[in-house]
Amino acid sequence: MHADVADTEVFNSARVRRTKYPNGERSYEIEFKGSKEELNGLRISRAEFGRSISRKEFKELRDAANLGTVRKLRYDVGGSISLQQEIFPVNAQVDVFEMAGAPARKLDQQYVTVDIELSMESLVAPFCAGHHTFSFLSKCVDMSANAETIMRHLSSTQVACHGLGKKQLRALNHALMILAQRALEAQE
Image 1 (spheres, rainbow, N blue to C red):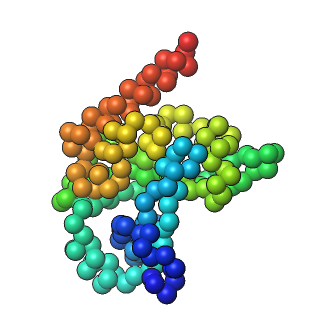
Image 2 (cartoon, rainbow, N blue to C red; image 1 turned 60 degrees about the vertical axis):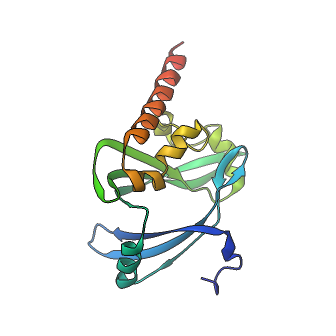
C-alpha cells in the first residue's frame, strides 16, 4: 500500500471482503478506510484504498479479524442527480444483511442499508435537497445526519460486532419512529 498511497497514516481500519458473483466467480479484496470528515454538516467523506488479494490471504486475514462478520446481498441501483440542469449518473448500493455478529448468526430482524457514492462534493447539496431519482430514499433514515444513537449502534462495524442486539434494536426502533413522525408530518 505504501507504494500506491502517500499518506497511509490517515487509515485507521481495514476490511476484508469476499464477493460472490451471479456467475459463480469470487473475488477477494482488502479495503483500508480513514475517519469520516465533515462536509456540509454531514460526516460522510473519508479516504479509502482497496486492492485485490488472494483467497489464501483473505482466509488468513478473516481468521485474524477481531470485530465480527457480516453477510449481505448487495444490489446496485442506477439513478442520477441533477445539478444546474446537468444530469450526473450515480449508483445506490442497497445491502440486505442476512447474518452478522461474532460469530455471525442469522438476523431475526430485517436490516437494509443504502450507500450512495458521490464522485464530486458538489453533488452533496443537490442530493440532500432531493434532486435525485432515488424515490425509495424517502422511506429511509439518513444515519449520517440523524440521531447519534442510530449511527453509533447501526453502523456496519457495530452490526458486524454485535449483530442486532438490544442496543441495535433500540436504535432501529428509534429510526422507525423518525420515519413514522416524518409520515405524520407529510399528512398534515
